Length: 144
Image 1 (cartoon, rainbow, N blue to C red):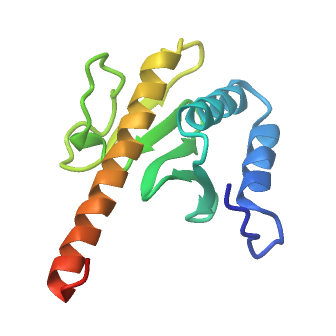
Image 2 (cartoon, rainbow, N blue to C red; image 1 turned 180 degrees about the horizontal axis):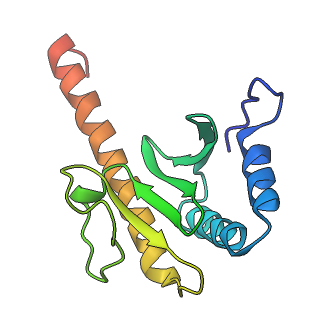
């Protein structure tokens, strides 16, 4: 897991730990569960801390963010519109052409297997996009 220190000297993982601890309520518990599920789904996921305090999980590109608000914890999938959503997990940001999100409210039950499947699909999409870009570059430069 990437462990680049931020300006404060703390790693992104430490900052996410602190966010979970500081929330101290159902939002922290939900963010901790989402984080655990992401790590289970993609064990070599990279944790990042971006945009002045947003937990981000990446694998060959951005998978999703974990934003916390007063009444919702939001998991925004960077390429969510390109992912299948057979269990209907996406319930926010549905009108866009690229992103999709899941809003978790206090007391919501998380379909853990469906969430992990979605995370794996996002990581696979990133990997296929990376492979396509690499193939295109090698064709343009004449390298194998």
